[in-house]
Amino acid sequence: MTIVPIEKHRDDGSARIRLVPFDDIRLSKRRRDLVRGIIPRVGLAVVWGKPKCGKSFWLFDCLMHPALNREYRGRRVQPGAVVYCAFEGQSGLEARVEAFRLHRMYNHAGAVPFYLQPVTLNLVKDHRVLIKVIRDQLGDVPPIAVALDTLNRSMPGSESSDEDMSAYVKAADAIREAFECAVVIVHHCGVEGTRPRGHTSLSGAVEAQIEVKRDASDRIVVEVELAKDGPQGAQIVSTLEAVVVGQDEDGEDITSCVICPCEDIPQPAKAGEPKLSANQRVMFRLLHQAGAGGLTVEEWNEQARALDIGKSRKATLWELRCALKDKGLVREYAGRWTVAHE
Image 1 (tube, rainbow, N blue to C red):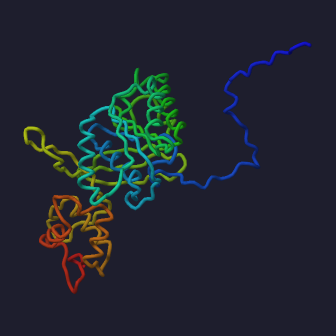
Image 2: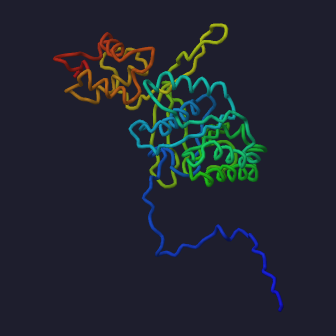
Image 3: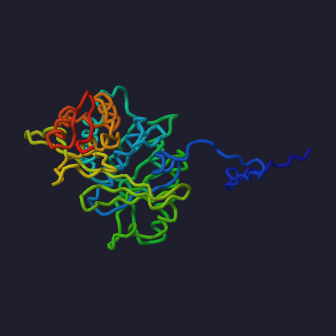
């Protein structure tokens, strides 16, 4: 009897490649966005801007909303676990987390699926290890987002090199593919300040490109300037409010900042434009949007709490209302509050 040797199967990579016939292609109905109109559900996104423009503050605040299953500025989110890789400024991120915990998680109960990775990595070399650690710790529930902050501190070689930037994009793509999640890269701008720094292969690879800048009033303006499968031009406007998060071993205050929404702020009613805090501006906007009929205290409070206003130790909702009244911007009549000039 002749024994015919069985040829060993060679793994040439073809097992993971498949051809889907046209008639079998069906539209997936799952959500396309992690944060509707801002960050894609799956894919690479780059958040870029000048140093100290607030991009890391904004991104952290934004990603905390899907981690907490909260709408973001009225936009639907895909809830789930978030992994934030802080490759620089790790102690600052810790203070940022504490600020959010104190001022944006009033009466929150339960664990928060947000995970800080505070070690500086070479992403090209270490991305497989990072994937393994995430899988080991999160188990069967993959993250919906992995943030890489910043590209410069996690990339070997030159940002201007096609080869080096392509290797970085490939590493980030491996994380996206491993978890079918959004991978958000925080990046700096070039000297001219008109686009993300380095080789254009990064912009060519992302599903969304988000610019962060400061306007003349020192507000943080976030704009979706590129979106491959959705509308462009969406803007998010915020301010940074400094808060005390604790004391160090010498009893000195430790401070950080929290993001405060301030879109569509109307001009104050009185001449001279009295100066308003970020929370006062939001309270004034809510009342202005209500129109001539105004709002009851309960309605006003409910809308403010939905935007995380009034949970700071610095000012209660009652104090914010009193401040607006003292500035002559709002008034109360028959149990309802209205803008003073309406």
